[in-house]
Image 1 (tube, helix red, strand yellow):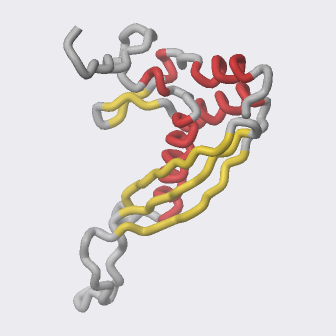
Image 2 (image 1 turned 135 degrees about the vertical axis):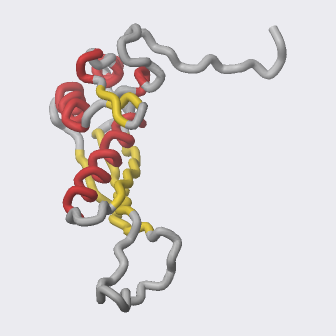
Length: 155
């Protein structure tokens, strides 16, 4: 159960990020990994734990792993998936999952780093980090723009 300063930690975790830290990739807004990690360090006094629980390779749907007869190469999996757990003492744990394609000609390190970063950010988001900014358009207000909940019956 959260301690006496739990409201202060929640406020620090959920504080909006500066607009200049929000980047765009593939038409979507995101907050880079280093800013999310920095927020957790500041909000918790660096009192959290991040563990990589599983690393998987997700195939592109082809179950055969036969050697390519023309090139002699073993086909690469389509993407790397990382599952991790973020723990904050007194707050509990949250899981995060991240995936990144294994691009032709690139090493597995780049895919692992990207998938691990995504998993970390998603676990942090489950604690509220950056959550209020999911729906903010670049250049827009920093105010929360969460979708309105619909009531079961008309007002």
